[in-house]
Figure 1 (cartoon, rainbow, N blue to C red):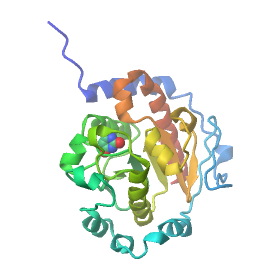
Figure 2: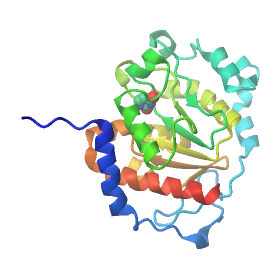
Figure 3: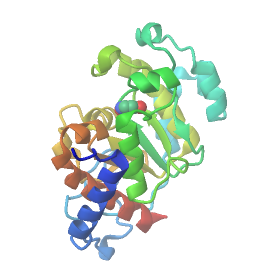
Figure 4: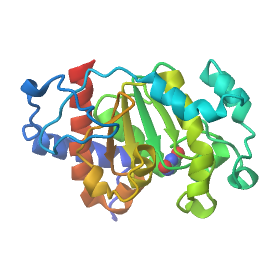
Length: 262
Ligand code: URA
């Protein structure tokens, strides 16, 4: 009889078990570096070997400065995520407003300490109006759960709130039109940590135009007082299961950073 294919959940459970035994001892957190500031510039890197947990305070003035050009727009003045979502749900600031089905605002806790940022909605997300619910989204849920974060306690969103046709990469003008919404969401939620899934998310959030994922992975970046890490996009892991080992390593580091600071 042909073997029954493994479900995603089984696959990840096996992956977590294997990686946990492989990486449990290897990732060494160095207590002496606790609370060492990593904020000498607006974006700084720690080494790959040492995580430097930050006692971060959101530098709200920096966000306000980025958002200042939009002060006269209604969404900028929103005092809650719900109000903001209601105001922008029919946004047509870029051409994607004409081709999307639903704007995908984001879901999760309005008081999340962790924001999860992806690239842009896919077909499933576009139809439902919710982020990361397709096959890659199911893997993302498992990845978060593997390091004890539930979808409900984090806030999940994307760089773009509308689906690019055929899931092509976001265009610079689409990012430029949409990213102020992300900054506003960050201002409302005030997270202490952000984890970006994929090169496109990391590069656009951190404005590291030439960065490869290999260069970003393992580093802790400071963004307005928020500690940011970047790892593989779950869709990339579905295509390249060998990369799961590295993703597991990144997630463990992210969890250590979180545990050391909260
Ligand atoms: N990929 C993303 O980057 N975001 C989603 O919401 C879904 C798939």
